[in-house]
Amino acid sequence: MFPTVFSALLSFSYYEIFTHPKRLVRKSLPRLKIGFLEIFPCLRIHGKTRTLHIHHWMYLPIILTLSIPLNVPFLDSQLIRGFLIGGTLQGFFINRQARRLIYPNPLEISDQYR
Picture 1 (cartoon, rainbow, N blue to C red):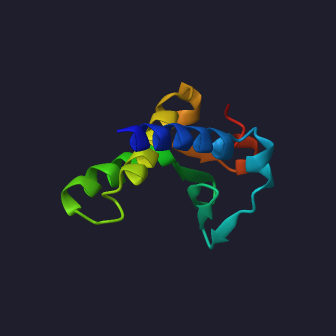
Picture 2 (spheres, rainbow, N blue to C red; picture 1 turned 90 degrees about the horizontal axis):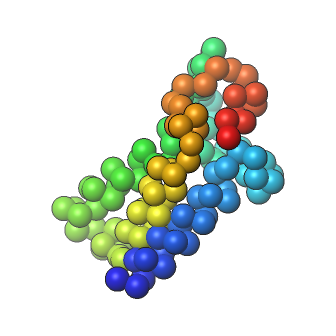
């Protein structure tokens, strides 16, 4: 139980520092973009006039839920499950405006939602 709680707290802190748009750490990270798909530092699908932002707190609980019946050794780790729980909880504690899924382009203006 302790490794899970420790990992969840570490994950919560990680996602708070690296995914908050106003943090200098987030702004200094390079963007990895392949065509219309951006996969780092966040998962986005860019269109001509709108951008779909797939938040980490949306896909982490799906991975956590799938990890239980799949019995994949990597996902069975208490540390990994704690990391998934912490990232999910951090997403639920952000304000309502940050939970938007679709942003108008240019994204640099709409990325400052918190």
